[in-house]
Image (cartoon, rainbow, N blue to C red; front, top):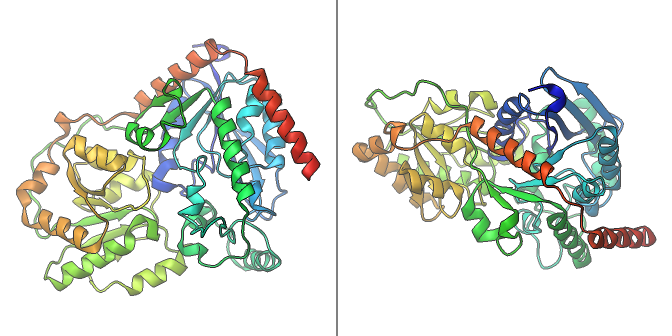
Length: 471
């Protein structure tokens, strides 16, 4: 197809697709998707980078062989909690991007580190918008209430908002500490209960009300919402998102042409691995305690743990003190391109997450590599295991439950080998199918795009006037 006739598409991400700072290896999926998508559309990728050295909210534009990259630099701490969802400076950057080029469609993969005004700004310029529910950030105060330990109407925001103390500490640390390229803490760590045990300030209920109103506006101004799981949509979002606006797409992987379908037999003890975030919400403490129980009961199964340990040293140090089994090994973080290599060091992948997971990228790679699975219940991972018959679903994320599942797969090799059977009976989705689906979705939206509801735009304008008056 002639490049002039390609759809012009803008991807909005919360971090660089090459960084490891994303839950559930989401950036690994996005990086593969971008490589595929760039061959079919004229693609621009926009995302922020945390930096206290670059000029904040400046914009860097570079052209790679496949797509254009737009990066803005944002502070690691903000002046107020409300800037995490309503940020006028980010609105200015986004408005500039929309004026610089004509986009046929915009796909917002996450509004974390951005501003809830983006969909309305796109509508003012007559551009259809797709939003993906991949991290739970938008709808939900629950990412703060549950993740940050709210009591009543207050939320702990010490990891988001500047204070005189944090400003001095950050300045000192940035001067002596080597520059980090993973942005792990800002993107992941500060959303954990562990890193929010103390509070520097509280947030009134009115702020959450404002955030909820803005989230409702996002729903009004977005044309389509993409879900990785129908179960997640039915459980959490059906009352909020009309079915006519919902689209479903399971995360695909780069499938190899030749599957490893030869028979095998595991010699020695079965090996297990965990790949994810070393945080309480991932069930990592319960997993370690489970292997302590197994060690005391005479099992010598190895557990290989892949997750950030350097930037996560406060929690990692305390976790490591709980380890009693000599067969638990920590390997640090893993690059997205090395996922399958790490999977192939073990026989079973364990994902005992306690927070809601809608991703299937990791488990789809595990199934393609013929690994058995142990996953927590009531999420997309359990749905996948239930449909594929590839592993055990935990009723409860507690040490005894995990230990029982591990010992079952060690004792019952026949059942284990059934979970690790050839992939002919269950087709794993391909990233190229994701690309084709999305390209069709964008084309349809661009072709049938209608004008935005003028009443919604007027409502938004009135709200912004009130904001300026209040300011």
